[in-house]
Image (cartoon, rainbow, N blue to C red):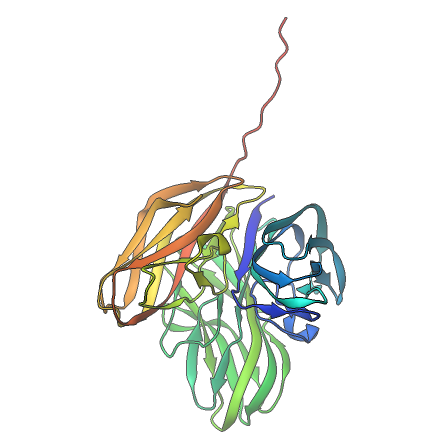
Amino acid sequence: MPTVLEAATDLTAVFSNTVYFYPFAGEIQLQTEPLAQYKVQSSFFVANLLIVVATNGITASSTVNTRKNAANGNLSVSIGAGLTGTFEDITDFDSLAPGDAINYQFTVGATGTSITFAVTSCTLDNPSATEILMAVGVGVGAAATRYTPLNSSGTPASTEIYSTVRSAFSWAGLDIYLFNNQITAASTVASRKNGANGAQSVSIPGSTTGDFVDSTDVDLLNAGNQIDVLIMGGATGGQLNSSRIASQLSNTGSLFLLTIGTPSISSGSSPSYFASTGGGFGSSATEASVQLKVRKVNLTVRDYNVDVVSNTLNASSTYATRKNGSTGPIQVSVPQSTTGVFEDVGDIDAYLIGDLIDNQFTSAASSGAIKCAATLQAQQTPVPTHSLMGVG
């Protein structure tokens, strides 16, 4: 059965003696569980929970576990006082049926200062290689139109910010949870394909909060399609805020997307930043904070595309895949002060079980900033098996 790597990144510290709930495919610190829950629209087998702890000033143990329908799931890791690094549950699993509500729970130890859960990841098994994608912490004002990638965090863009697919996919299950809505007229969230509204959409009545889902419509995607999500605020009122905008992307050929959030990087003392592979937002000058360990399946990766929506850097920049602390063959160069979509569609790399993967941004710019979204296509490859042959 196809396996997908789910991952999310957030380099914001959380505090002692507090329980936080995180959406399944995007990290945003929430203290009310319904805001983090997502009702899956397919069946999944969830395993291989992995947590990367970047900093830890907590003087008691902390726990991370999966949640299913507001109860603890079977997957959990315990993080000892002051410990950092990678923590895994490679034994347990959760089975999900359509309609099950999932999220993570982070129970921070009672004493000390703070801890940074930099990467949260699991594997998903599903016959259609379905992955869950989430844009978290998205807001929009009245009469405003904004766009967000499928996996991202924070302020959406005023221009389209695409992920480009290089194979056929089915995209469905558009689902937004609003916890604040001061807009008094109807608002709309819709899928976007090649600069036009797609098949999926939800209409949100004025001043109404809660979960809004399009459980019927499907966007059929072909190689070269550029996709993102539209959030259009109603004509009157104030602001609406969502904890997450979720959807599901499926492919019958064991393909899935590794998305690299929406890093907004400014020039400064460090010419190099690292971003996690798999989703969410997080860029760091310390590579170990964002490295994702490949588990269960080997992967072939290709078709790296970077959509730059703003760029005032006064020098060119480079985006490259990284594996085990070394730069891989897949790279994209972006000229100074230039926007648009930049791709490497020729180079290929192999990610094997146990490899540590991430992405690197490098620029010699002395001024300016750049904002982008990046996507890498991954395909599961067979794990070699060995047999013993008797000798006569």
